[in-house]
Length: 458
Image (cartoon, rainbow, N blue to C red; front, side):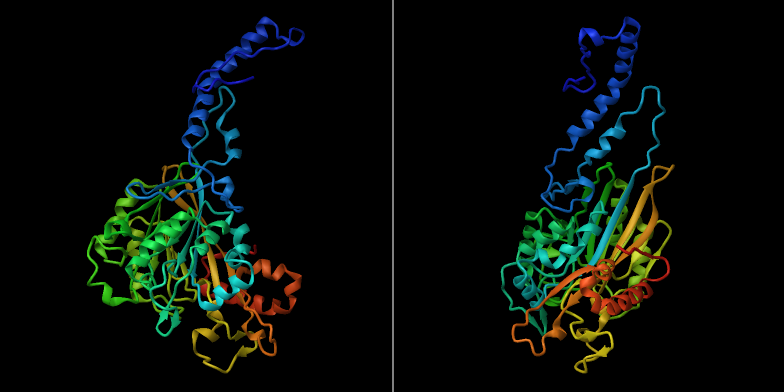
């Protein structure tokens, strides 16, 4: 049997004479075809509407693809997986299935390309090495976002630690997309490390890798523009991002509305943007770069603003900046992850399970919490009221491996830094000597995130 390319039209089947059905049976077959024709047409029309090419990632979520568009359009479509096609054609006479769209949104913390992290990429064949082990857990998400807290720009300011100045290559964005991320957050305090021009260059690198850039743009309006993602099932997801502060504070008063910039939080006007997004989208995700560094407790500003964002219509508020984990809480059908910690960094390099290396014991270099991370996983399902509701809340505990303490007495020492799910590290028998450390950090992550989050051993 074959179907014509025009939606809704079918061609009668042709059988060999010895297998041709009798007239009564033939009439039943033709009746079934006539009933099925509108459904087949709907299937063909839907398939033709998903026109964006697939990305080449080895870890595409559920057979999906994304494409980051440039202004004036800010919409990106995630293509329907082939496996969904069979479910579009119901048996003749069957009642239509209820609309039960379900999507999974996942958010990770700070991606910081400190010098030794970049050395690790050099020693191990490229930036894909740093996040390659995240592929299986990212494959479970329909929309995955990460805070890109390093410009990918032309070097204008030297990389250094005091004051902290960061920069990295465009290859890093390609690696994040290959791992399975879909969106990169540009609104953070390091956004101007390579001046305001670096914002435009970073966005260009991000979009060239087929990631969606959120929170930074060629102008004030562009930085605050809602990025729309359409999932495989047609769910419209709005992405916005804001930062409470930037390091280059002298730029704040000098940048005009037409200058490159990131979205610095303004309060009421930005809450209005969230309300507008909620009116035209099924799901709203807001990334907030806020709080105090190395603090496990959300500030009053975080708590007040998080609740306001939920009231404005956000379903997920994904926090970053403290470099350590903070609690995850639910506010009705809204989830606030106050801080998702570091996804990847060189912080915590001097940490060891039995104690701290007795140098700078109070600094980020010696704190194990700065190597802890979480991939926050929020599942939303469309209810009978046609609105999306949070149906599941979980997190995959992550840990940054860093071999800095093994450098002593090794003249051929090379940095080995990467991030991986703690479940995968614990299951790796070749790393058995680190299993006590991994078990300790899993418990610490569970405590930091709070009782409302279920940890996933993946």
